[in-house]
Length: 231
Image (cartoon, rainbow, N blue to C red):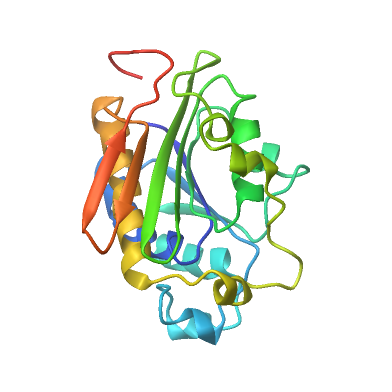
């Protein structure tokens, strides 16, 4: 069980993932530190699909949720920033388990590159469009990428130019790429399933899961580079 869990993105997927994640960590690793990372603020338009108290309006998302996590009895650090080349190394460290719940490929590519520079790390990345989503697992063990990398399997992540801009909240981005609460919940659940498998058994029998809300379907696939009994 890692000692540090880093949730990058506290919006549509991340805020729905947080409550069961905290319960899971409290039950299995009371010494764990949960790090919440997000540079955005909670806006009125977020309330229909994101899990925040009404008192959080206008506050930074990571800081608002960190207060709740601490009240729930788990150590928590808030990083009220968007990740970039200058700070990613301070936020994501050796041995971390990273839950990546962002809505842009630029941040996915940034975190993927940084994970590849570490000897030991686990990345669980989740994303969605309106009615479908996916979750990827990337594991680094002894300096080797067991599953490949995000950009190897999805080249569009490496070439995308989208990303969080200063002053642009997720409400503006959702206007261009609609998100549904049910899809966010499905992706968050699949990310938690992957986390449970990694923490309880040391591995997972898949590298990616495709999710379809309309069909209520989850389809796993493997793209392992190396087979291991326990990672």
